[in-house]
Length: 462
Ligand code: CLR
Image 1 (tube, rainbow, N blue to C red):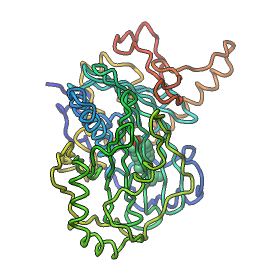
Image 2 (image 1 turned 180 degrees about the horizontal axis):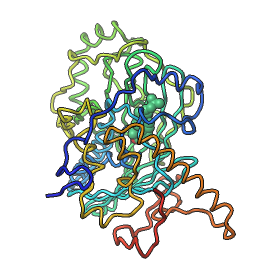
Image 3 (image 1 turned 90 degrees about the vertical axis):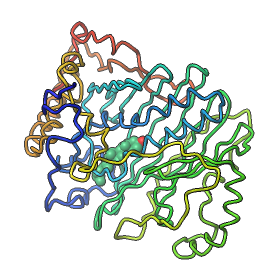
Image 4 (image 1 turned 180 degrees about the vertical axis):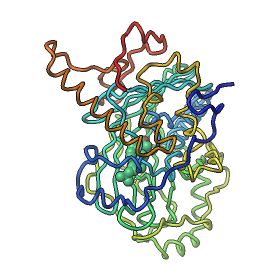
């Protein structure tokens, strides 16, 4: 049995203390002077944090890692793509209702996690701009990437662009898949209840066969019945539609054949028309991934090139002010001949009192004696500020956070002043071009799991 050396609980399913309310302190009072600005330089009170480092938060991509194993077990390239696409959607499931801000990782901070389906190592490789890199592996797959989250405040909402690419490699098939992250938006900063949506087009590319899954994360700004919806097609290298995929990133993801989807649309046309009139600003029938079709039209047929997502810096479309848009229930998400590829696990019962964490997230900061004795001294679990917040000590967390940031500044000054003039370099990752996309990326250099941390004289960052 694993027992956490910090809280004493075995394989915990909850945190040591419930979330403390921020009381009268409003987000607006802190952010009102930052309209139109990048938020990485604004200091937010710890009360708005969740007790995880962004490195731990990134690790939540792995919650449904079995989907990558399933992908590698399929003999057919389309079936493999289905599971890789389902994994890409599942990786976002834990973001539902998660409105706490993870702690910014310190430069050189690491986080490791070993689970039956995989192991992962993450490192904060740059501070300004903040870049986090990760590398996960198992017997069947490699999953790696780097993320540079850009937060921009637009007044009523905060728009988050998680810049960077992620890559899945299936060695058995000598295949690499890459995709971009979609944008994320936190609404109702000034009034109403905060809510989060993910929107934009995600393109999962199989660089060996030319198959693509082009998925649209619909915005509820246009029509509340689109809330959380994801729809799109798997196409081959000649742009032929092979599968229709649909679901909600908060709940489930399914696949069917394009014919069943077309028939379903025809049979239900009357229903979509009347529903559309109520709230939809456009007259085209609901339930068509318009952006996916536009994307398809603009795609060049083979020889294909992975297109890189375009930036959108115009700010989000704000939905009508007030509440969280209600998702419909009348609207079917069960098209004939569908297979469910992914379903989100239920959140723990007490989740609402614990930052809306999933069961997977609850255990991320756990540390048993064995792990403590072998893990790297730069691991997020050893951050005193996060630990204090987890225990419900907000003031203690704030004090520790200040101390750590001050220490980080001092280290940077000392490094600059030192005669060696050597720039700081990450220990486990190096900047390079992603061989599949040609984009700048951070690639794992190996060595972490040998665990020679003593000999390597790893820096004391806490
Ligand atoms: C979304 C999924 C992406 C990676 C990613 C990057 C940044 C994360 C974001 C995800 C989720 C939302 C997030 C954000 C950083 C800050 C923001 C956690 C995981 C929170 C909700 C900001 C709260 C505070 C503001 C309201 C000021 O692939």
